[in-house]
Image (tube, rainbow, N blue to C red; front, side):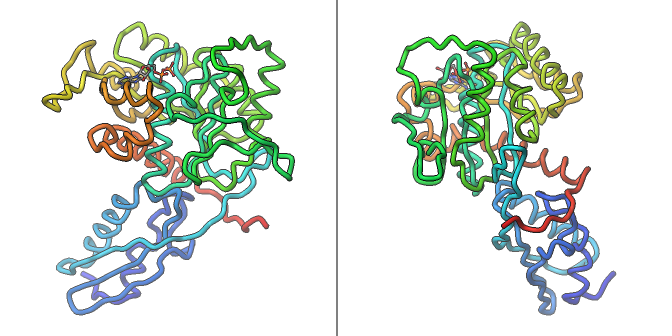
Length: 359
Ligand code: ADP
C-alpha cells in the first residue's frame, strides 16, 4: 500500500496512455493537478477534444488505477481542456487528426445515415468534426441534414463548406449539382474531384473528418489514401446474409488498398417499436458481430430500424433528432465511442512521436 501524496498519485497514472497519442499522461504534460486531503484525492487530467467522447471512461480508468495502489482512498478525477492543434496531414496539408471512411458493399444499407449520425454524435460528445460526402453517385448527406446552398470560393481560393450551426463543416457533390441530376463520372474526373473536394475545402482544424464513401469499388478509397493518411474505415451492413457477403467484399477492398478496418456496424438490426421502446428481431440480428469476429475486425455496434430516424432523414432533420431524442441517439453515441476507443487502442499500439506544434 502506498501512502497517498500528490507525487504518488502522479506516479500511479504517469504511464496511463493519453487516448489520442498513446503516450503517457505525465510525459505529455496532461496531469494538471493532484491533491490529497486525508482520505480524499483529486486529480485533474487534461484531454484534447479528440478524446472527449470517451472522457468518462478514461476518468473511471484513472480512478481505478489510483485506487488499486492506494486502497481505502476515495479518488476523484476531473477533466480539463488540453489544447493540441492538429499537425498538417498528407500532401494536401489538412489540419485534421483522424480521417475516417464509412463504406459498405452495396447501396441502401444506411451507410450515409451511419456516417452522418456518427459525425453528429462525435460532435455532440465534444469533438470538432467535419463531414464529407464522397458518395458522388448518390450524395444524400445534404438531404439527411437539410442543408442546401452553393459553396463559395473564399479569399484564400478555398471552397467554403456549407456549415450546420457554425461549427460543423459539410461538403458534398450534392451542393454542386442540380437535384436529381445524374452524374456520370469517368475515372480521372472522379479522382480529380474527390482530391479537390478534400484538399480545397476550408475544413479548418478538426479532430475527425468522416467521409461517406460510394458503395462498392475501391478506386475512391485508393485515391483518398494517396492524398492523405487515413485512420481507418468503418463498414456498414445489414443483418441479411447477402448484405454480409457484400460487406466482406468491402472489408477486403479496404484491406487491399492498405486502409485499416476500424470496425463493422450492423444497421437495421431489429426494429425499434415506437410504442413499446422494445426492439424486435425481423431480419435476424447479430450476424455482423459473428462475421466481424471471423474477419478479425472490431464490432462497433448496432443501429435498429427506427422510424423516427427514417422520417427525420427524409425531412432533413437528422441533426435535430439526434440532439433531442435520447432513444434515437443512444446507439449512434455507442458506435461513436467505440470508434474513438478503437483509435485510442491503435494509438497505444503505435504511440505517435512527440510533435512540435506546426505554426
Ligand atoms: P446508403 O447510404 O447506404 O445508400 P442511406 O443512409 O441513404 O443508405 O439510407 C437509405 C434509407 O434507409 C434512407 O431513407 C434512410 O433514412 C433509411 N435508414 C437508414 N438506416 C435506417 C435505420 N436504422 N432505421 C430506419 N431507417 C433507416
